[in-house]
Image (cartoon, rainbow, N blue to C red; front, side, top):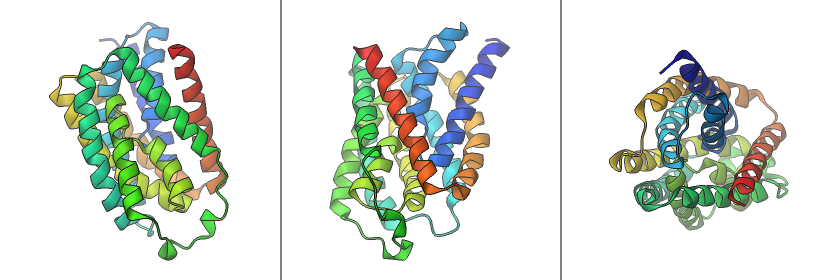
Length: 258
């Protein structure tokens, strides 16, 4: 293992975690393709889809932990939303993470492509008036939230993501949760989800621990910095950044699949 390898993996972890802290996602939507394509491009390493999803699962846990810590004050976290969606997504992500061992490389990439495409479409649906809702007036369909997060959890567990790149558009478009509350609460739900997918991946031997550790160190530094930046940014800018990231990733994955 040389210095170029360590620097490459660290920078992937740092950039991905900074953005994930800022826009309220675990970062797998960014780090999955970065880990899959950048190390072989630079000639430092080549990871399989199983290895990438395993590294992502472990790293997402620590990235979201840092993000939630930064958002813990200010009334951004909706505890009812976190409870209903968190329990469902934990069950789903463990099923997906454990079951992914039996899937082919192409199968994992296909699931990732479908999730990214669905998220990209939802991010471009107009979200009028949601940021005019006061935090104390937020209401949502609890059982719809639970069912949707269970489905997201299964798919996210397969690709080693925690599913926030799908949770965020669902919370904005379907459940009508204000942007800042969505970002903070989705980080907390993603943290719970990542426990299921991480346990599933580790118990089936899909984790390469050295790059995972490097990514974790990068996450713990970058994620709180990103969350602090996100608090100060205009919600429309945050939504646009997330939409473009998801769309770009979806296009790249589908080009490879096709």
